[in-house]
Length: 122
Image (cartoon, rainbow, N blue to C red; front, side):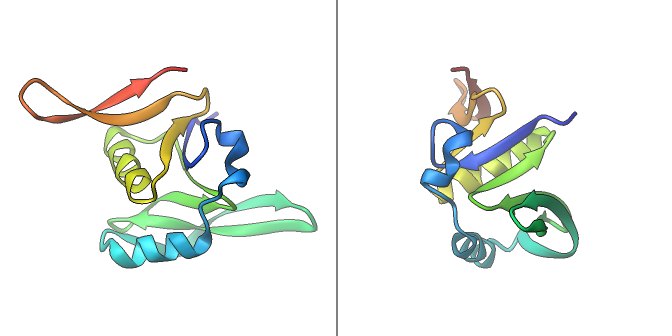
């Protein structure tokens, strides 16, 4: 089973609906970032009230790896580069990148000024 990371505005990703990331915000993000685009063919189907809905993937440099689902951006089992991109996306959206277990992913600077991924456990 994949381990998901989510861009949300709440401390707990299960509460993302209380301060959602909207489709309009994602559209603006994609318009402002030449590395991002909506996929025209890749999607995730999610069960919702009244049936199943299709949520198209967000492609990063031509590879579909993220998707917006109702109130958050998700990525299943991301690699280190995808985690870094998601941290940047979260910063642009004034949000947080959190894992399934509530840990938060951020950037920190090494002693020599290099950015690295920092994981803060709850």
